[in-house]
Length: 452
Image 1 (cartoon, rainbow, N blue to C red):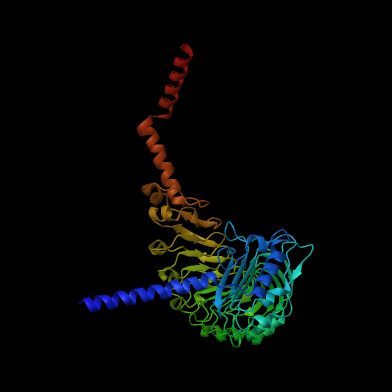
Image 2: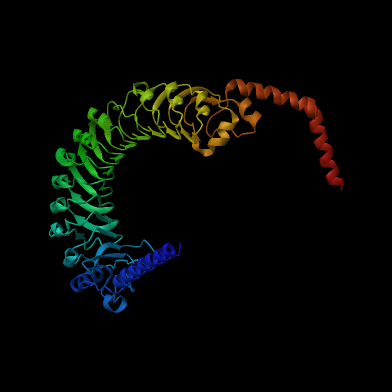
């Protein structure tokens, strides 16, 4: 027993010594000199000349580490693996008004992640993305994010397509222009491609998505892209979220989209699209509002959309009745059908949807009586809208019985109004006496007040 205990003790001591040795080695390991100088230059050109890295951070990968900078050991030396500039944390590096890219950025030979946000804000002196040397970062760079830089203009450099190890490319909310370069098709390992809120124009190149089978998120929203949706979108077999909203796309949806069997979000709002919706059973969020779609809701295959949580079909020129099939979407939380030409009644079955918290039916030609129970109005609150339907009314009996206010902008049904008027007159006579008695009572009160 003593031998076993002694052996265990020796093993423990050996492990502790190895760990201490490793920690000592990492703590005293120097940073590559050229790497340090390149890092100082890159940061100084972004945050301003007043930033003196050599004085403030003599050991940027060690005991004076810079916020937003991460490092790793390679062959006994420290190298930068991540650089994040932008107002993320209180002590984050923030850009100056005259920020610019320093060519020494491409000397950071082990860089895996680069993020620059809320920088390059001057529109009077717009800056462009460097057009060369990106291939020097190709062996290591996995994430490139340039976001919310309103002074970052020009086109996407074609040689970004040489960053073959990228899994995330985010160039969102800038002032970038031009057409989407076909060269980006070389980014075959991308999982996230976000180019939203820029000024890109023209058609989406058909070969762009040929090899992006690993892509999970594609966001091209908020641009000036035109033409039909490319059928090559069907190559994105892993896609979960597709946002092409707020562009100028035209035509019908390519039937090949049915191959996107994992797609959970499809946002095509505010384009000029029409036609039929391909079968997409995995959809949870479907947003087609503000398209000249036309037709009626019966043309949608609701049986194949049972996973829907969000259904946004406002201002699409839809006609006809609201099918009962929509009331079978048990996971529905948000339903907007406003601003169409829908007619017919409103089914009380909507109140049976357990998760529904928003229902917008205003601005249609719906008719008949709303027969929702009072608890439904209480649950929905201001998130239920049915005004501007001239022939739609509500039942006061249900509202009064539950003590819930009437739905905003919807009149009472005439039958209820007649009944309420007769009941009011009857109550006046039985409870308050005749009109003559009521008037005499008030005269007596007035005289009494005057005498006092």
